[in-house]
Length: 110
Image (cartoon, rainbow, N blue to C red):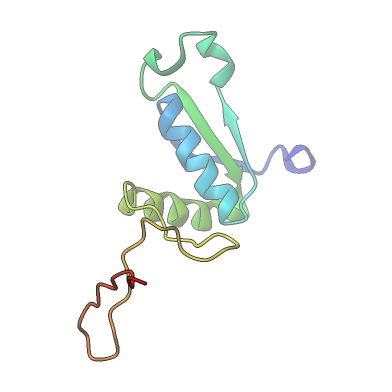
């Protein structure tokens, strides 16, 4: 963000945890951002008062950044389901059969 220092805007203020979540949402959306004030926590961590940490973006990215923050807030606590390279995890719900009924398969006895 150093090339356009005069053309940045603050899009959010909050606690360390809030700003870290929003920063990750912006990075996932492809928006470059800068956290300001995080160095002031100095080991206090999440106990630092809310609103002291700021999140800044380029003016051109402000609308997208605000949308990404809104989306993150609306969907917090609802992680996206992404399967790893080997398919769904064993804890994922099992799919139903073609007729909509769940089939519990039993191990055959030999």
